[in-house]
Image 1 (cartoon, rainbow, N blue to C red):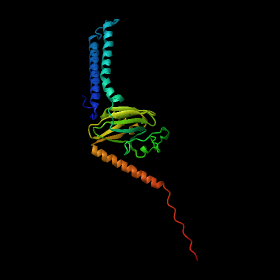
Image 2 (cartoon, rainbow, N blue to C red):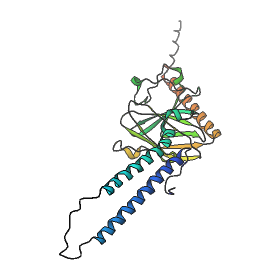
Image 3 (cartoon, rainbow, N blue to C red):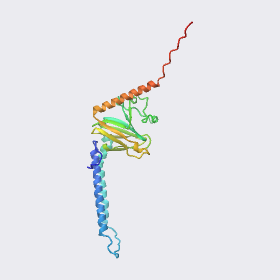
Image 4 (tube, one colour):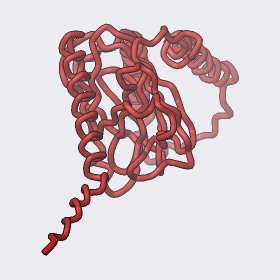
Length: 268
């Protein structure tokens, strides 16, 4: 394993790291071999006398077949070896049943994160309702969406739980990248892509955008926090309470002020 890689906290990260390390060391070996041959040929076949002349060499069919077949065999091996890892990470048929489902919407230059409310159900989305103040297009007519909680650039999850992220973008292509989880997935406007993971260690980890999305690309950073179940429950309950208080305050401010009672004229 390569010690300079970010710490792996994902349940499927070991497979990714093994594949990365295998390709790295194969590439390193080929690099050393090719350059060693290159140096030997420079020294061995250098021009020693002015009378030395180069001569044409037609080639060797055996060598040409070998350096065509060997790379093909190597790439075929890597393809079959990586297929199992890719299947476990990307195939919906192999994804475990999620304990939590959230939605993530990329927007220059931030990540919107939508949690289901206390009912545990995400409200209906309507693309026609997508706006700067409603990035997910939450339908206000759907009661399941009235208690959904939307955060910006922060995600919280309990450890050792399967999380399913439904990923999309409002404007341009972004790339949802969490190095410590070994996940990187493009967020494409108009499409929803599922990404799953399971974090095994508490702590805060960077959420980055791995796709150049504009001049402020460097600003598109978030934090993913993994907590114990008790701490996560306390955090999400507090968010629900804050959202409910904010909604109640907004409703109160929208109500018209009570009109004063008319004064009864006095009689002489």
